[in-house]
Length: 457
Image 1: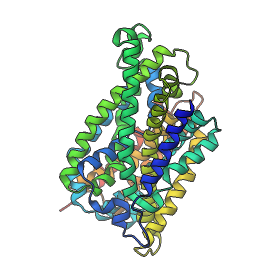
Image 2: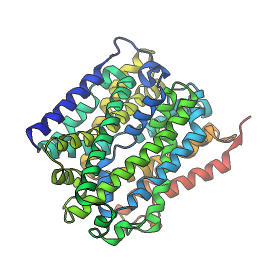
Image 3: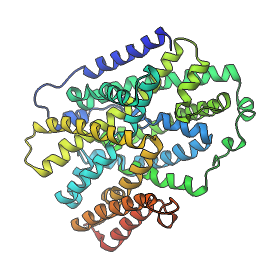
Image 4: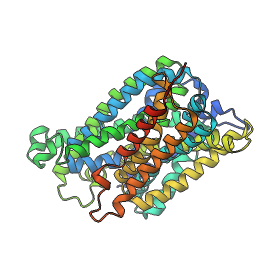
């Protein structure tokens, strides 16, 4: 990178901090203002913050697109569009009409405080932004030549420092900036690639044939399991928070639908650029660096800086959102159910929760050192715990008694965790019975719901 490119990156970080600290909260703040921004989020702001938040795994997308080509769309695109549409039509309006703040608040209504406390810990696990902490560390490592540990620490600090004073409103303001930058960077890269190298004919003649197939060389069952993991969307705290913060129920529903259209466009850009990387840099040692390496190869001075900012914006937008969600879960859901918390203390404990989530994320990031592996591990364990208990509070009239809901959440989580760990102890390095850990957890949860569910009058 040139001095100009570094200047663009530093200008972005400065602008991010400035925008994040605008209109700071001072003194005691109501939980509804700090966590859901007073429920005044408009449709454009809703789309910008949801689109930017839900696409933080950019290096993982680059890695997968480089290795498996078009299959990226069938693994990390289509299943999540389907899940998002399900959320829009089944849950979005109901969530906004409930006037709640979090998923555990809904669990309290349906099952009681003890079940909500168990659910709060599960939501915290879902929200911990470990994979995005790893990605921001890798990006800072690439851009500045720092060690991964230093990159993780500095990148995380820039991603969350303004959340302590601005809360959800800081998230929305910075996400509007991030939304613009992530599209600007990838549109620029794609345009340069297309006009410099050509389109389909160039790609088809320079990548392995399987890169242009729907499976990319992966098995049907490997791809199918991601369609189940994508159901995590239905219990994603980011989706619920945006719906709770929407100005109206209609904004919540249509905001998700418009967001899907934006994700389709962005997936086209990212998947195409990943395949171009395979064509232009066929012997790349580390596929997770495919986007930065490609930009360094084909972009001129200045545009490299713009694309670096696009990568940072894509990751930071998600890291900040999930760190804030994890913090809000501690402040609004866990601590008030463990001890007496005055209304003004919710923001204090939320700030403590943000810090705690970063410490845990840093530890997980340095342990796994693989974005896709972190997604797979946390998604496989957390999704079974909450999917059935949360979904059935909005859909249908059958409810589990509180003790059954607690058994369902803890039991399915433990089963999936043990199943996940089984590969580390088996002789062939595979899961028990060859089953992905998410499956037995969900199966147990469904069975417990079928056995215990009673009609809610």
